[in-house]
Amino acid sequence: MKLKNIPKEELELYSYIDLTRMILKEEGKSLNTPTIFGKICKLLDMTEDEYADKIGDYYTSLTTDKNFVLLDDGTWDLRDHHSIEVVLDSDEVYDEEDLTETEELIEDEMDDMAPENIDDMDDVADIDDVEDDDEGLTIINEDELDD
Image (tube, rainbow, N blue to C red; front, side, top):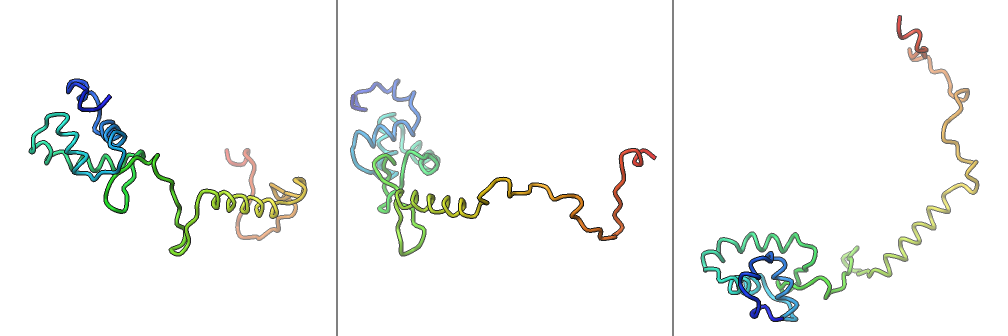
């Protein structure tokens, strides 16, 4: 159902973010902040003053919502419509597959660093192996603490 066919009373039950999602789906293209919020204000019969008072908060809510992405041209679109690239170096772009391969290489290197036999690992040093430093530290038992 088109947004313009939904009664105002029902539209008022939706958040601005929900309405934004619906507008972007219906339009099928990315839109800038003033255009999207203008459409919301028109649907809700808001005044120009209300538009001016609320557009800043609306923009903030768009920037904090993970469902939207701000494109290079200053327009917003649904994140689902875009693949995400991770830039690790200014000259190189890596996609998800590259990152998975890197994670596997790191795991392999970590496995290579681990001892072959778990029994080779000593979690606690033997107390007999500790040298006496004579730096004024004395080990006392609990009975001596009470005195």
